[in-house]
Image (tube, each protein chain N blue to C red):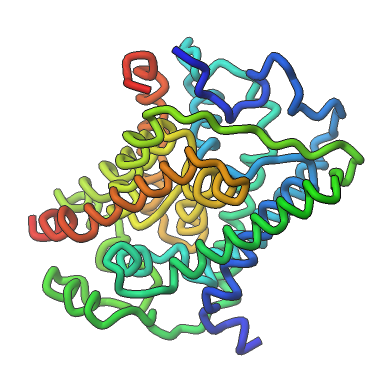
Length: 186
Length: 161
């Protein structure tokens, strides 16, 4: 049990994530792709006569159930399966973030950012509302996210997914190294 | 515009991908269970961590590259085995794969998503896990992502693909 409570190394977590692909295929010929759920949410709640949201979403309900599972998994893991040790990440990163007032490493996500008060600051609005918008807009424009392109697409050897994955990385590298420091100094 | 939409099976008039079986609602429970296990792995391997994502994009740790790389490796071997041995679903139906066609959206959209990933430290999967972990403020990130998807759908025809 103590072993489970420790953070899992990449060579345990990665292969288990990879096994999701054959699990979904064998359970019902379902293709791993999480961002499609954002589209299903639009199709269900406010299709507004837009052709892109006009499809039989009832056939995609399995995917909504799947992400509900991820949410429940988050509850279970954080309630029963974590030890309360601070996250171990590169000291350079921590030094760098400390300069922007992010000094609390007690949780996997910085409590200095992940709180409701922060949302009502300029930085919080950019990071959460702006960032969320970019995630939703970008994944659909790209036709998939890390699961659909980087894992499902790459594992079925589709070169458009490699292009998408490289672009995900370029965007992320630009944000973390160039833009995020500017946003955090606002 | 070309049909670049390879995701929604019900749009596929050929219906080659579609299960012909009518399933009762409880058949979805198996996806719930896979989702729960997947969510636990997400948290335990720290894929849901904003810190870990920053580390990755700043090339300060191998962890995330190891996670994604080994996930792709295991998935690719599994897919190869499924194809090689013609493995069927538990309902005895053939497993099919769709081909993704290239379009410029993968570049523009990819860059846009990358920026969002670096900012929020979360791709769509971890968003759900983070909410489950008690970071309720992430609900706003999720709602904003749904709004982003809606805006894309609304202006899709006018965007370069």
